Length: 316
Image (cartoon, rainbow, N blue to C red):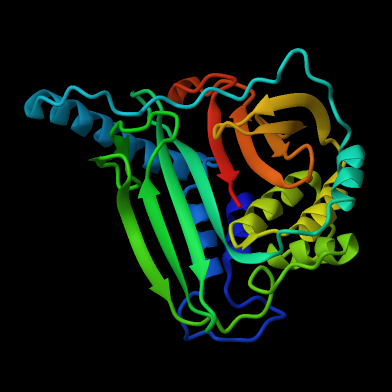
């Protein structure tokens, strides 16, 4: 319950020290935070609710394949965890941060994001299923923006995939296309992130409604919030690399190839029951992706140690 309350506080569009718009609609950030709350798998109650939906989805897919005669296998399998290359050298985060400082600063910061994600749905009596989506957010000069969400899995081009509503859809099917009016918020993460490490650290605290210093797990969550709003320029990526280099417990493990075919340096952080892998560009220090895997089995939901809970790959 404590975790749920903290998520609700972070999703609150009217924080204690912010302007009060109690009768207004949620802004885009608050909607995203509430959606994340609904999808949290750390508590049994929301996970069970999703599990019941996932059970119905699997049954519906089986029926659809039987009665429609469809023979193309849907892309349902959960992605395997990224594997560190055995012959690779681990690069300390401080070294990577120094490399990032030397980059010439091009391209620059851009508002909006382009991200491919995989999220795991679990059930009491059916195998886990994975929902792959690609999301593109673009901002206009007047402060309005659009969000396009597509069901696709680049690991299996052309295969049907599951949508967020649990329906089997064609690869590339548009799940949602929304436009938003100009935003009234100028607070993080809506405001531009700074390019100085100390200011960026404070920005990340404010973006996640945290008044105390972020621990490493909270910092990685804040990185996800940041990259879901902004495509960082080289200067901001360098500042973020420096902030991450100062985090405790984030250790280098070597080189990986991510799910978009990009080479990156991997750093892992262990939490209770999960491990998060941070993948960064070895030349620029830009964050390429975040992968969270289970480190212990959840037998009641068919989850084994090493299964991927979620993965996000950000693109410039």
